[in-house]
Structure formats: C-alpha cells, structure tokens
Length: 272
Image (cartoon, rainbow, N blue to C red; front, side, top):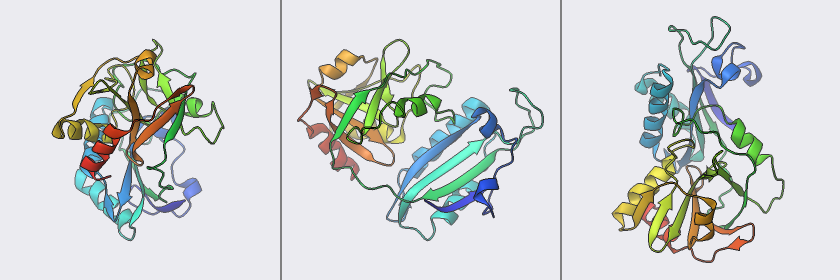
C-alpha cells in the first residue's frame, strides 16, 4: 500500500497517470532506484543508499537532482510515519525523440515514495531453491541498482510454493551471484565469503554493512568468485537485504543447515 508519494516534488492527483508516457524509465528501464527501511522514524543506512544512487547515476551519465532537494522530499514523505519502506526512483526523464540514444538536455524524473512496512520475518529461517533463470554478464552495469529487473522477475516467477522464500541465481557462466532480491554470504572454516559481483549483481547496502561489521568484530571476509559447490560445502549461509536485514538459511533444496552463529554475531553488531 502506498502511504505517500512525490513525483518531481509534487503529490500526483492520480497515481495511475502520474508519469508522462514518454519517460525513458518506462520505455527502456533507463534509470536507477533504491529501496530502504524506515524504522522508528529514521531511514536505515540512508547515506549509503544515497551514495549508491548517485554512483549509479554517474555510471549511466544521468544528471541527478541536488542532494538537498532529494533529502527534503524524503523528509516530506517520511515525516508522519514511524515505519515503512522508502523507494527512490530516478529515471533519465522525458525523451524528446524516439530511440535509444539519450539527449544531453533531459531532466531526471524523480519519484520518492513510502510503502507499508512488510511483515517482519527476520527470525524465520529461510528455505531456498536454485533458479533456472541466469543473470547476464555486463561489467559496466555490475553493482548498480538499475531499473531493468526482468531477470529477477523471471526468476521469481519460477515458483509459487509459499514455503520457498528466495531463489539463488547463477550467471550465464555458472558462477553464484545472489538471491533474486538479496545478496548471499557463506561461512566456511572460519571465513566469511560473498560473490565479488565483478560481472553482474547489485552491491547491496546491507551487504556493504555486513562487510564493514565483519571486519570490526574480527571475522575474516573475502569477496571472490563462488560456485554452487561452495554453497554445498558451506557451514552456514545467510542472505542480506536492505529491508529484511540478515536472514539465515535453513535449507536449499536437499541441503540443510543448522548453524547460524555468524549471522547472529553480525545482527548483534549491526543492531538489527
């Protein structure tokens, strides 16, 4: 449920007609977005989200709005709320001509919206599956949260079993990348491992916080290429997501885990 929304700084009179039909975000997925948790009236890790948002704009050569303007709009939509999900979308804006080539004089479209907070399920152990849909490699887009999420849409459409909360995705060469809406961590022999995301995948904000916290509490961590056999040999697996935090994995198809100590240590360190 939408609790509050601004489109280019104004509350739309009709949500169904809030964007022009020639916006490049709609036509080509030409833009970036962020999803963050509002908890007790404060947006969790807001600075990290904004840093990635502006970094994504730089990679796509989108001129973003001034930081102060965006912060003011975030303040407006969160002002009367204690909890919820904040979503920020920046597209390249209105296309003056048809075609892929962007113009040099477009103004970014910005959407700042609040949605109802999801049911909190952090304590619930996750049951996963492998996805058949593969992620395409493109180092130029790796790491950023761009608007084209068709691979994730296809992956999540592969199952309707309510007992399966997430699916793990490989890239086209068979490397482990992420969950459909999460980053993945593997604990093995005292070392914390996560895919390096050099070819594809999103460098999640919660992923970054876990990497930082692991170093602070003395957990050795490595970003490196990982494969399905690394999952099979893991002592512990957990997923990270900006909205849901850190969630431990109990099973992946026929593989089961009963160790969750590393996830618990990092939850405590991050006060999740």
